[in-house]
Length: 304
Image 1: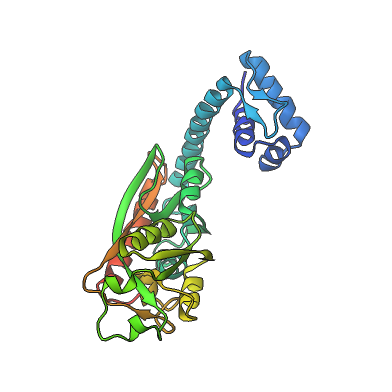
Image 2: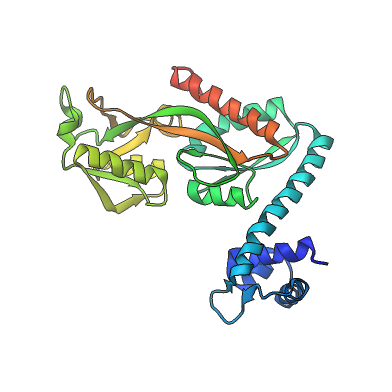
């Protein structure tokens, strides 16, 4: 009889596309993984893996089996989570993914508040690229993510939380920053800094540059909002920064000038995401509600 362990080995191979890395991912030796996959193929009577290819390729039926096995493994994980949840109540460890354009300045106060209210709940927080974390969520490697919309993926519950205004910031001594009034036409041809192209923020900055007739500086990608603020403050270019970051202790406007443009505005939508039918849905909603409440309070002028 085919086992869940054999299916987990097959899914790991599909993700890693390499026998050694797949064996490392599931904590077995490479011969063990290979032997169990051959046993699975013998049991099913089909070839699942094209072993001569590099990277490893799945056969058409192998890809179909992986898709179904992935869903099966997630269902089993949810059953186990449900049992743990019944024992622990509002407890347990939640693997929480968050974009670096939100986590460093929004999450610290929320984590502290959650710990006060639910001391048995643990958050294992990982920063990452939203598109990549959505894939990790679908594979069961994360339980919940916080990211800008849009977010793609089937079988995901997407909970919009709040809209965050975006602001153009300038080097403090730039003529546009020193002018009594400024309009979006003053930014035509200006150079804008952004994060690398994997980020939602990069794509949105590109759209804003197109709208303004400005240009994105492709040779100068920041690795964080702090890096963008510092590069902007040094005179390297303009940047688009979110409202909550500019209000936070982690960010601020100490080295950049926020431009007040009466004929321009932009924002981004932030959502919490988890798998549909997940056993910890109640816990995810509590976290999502606290994030939304905190963000709205700060956007209305309150403290973090």
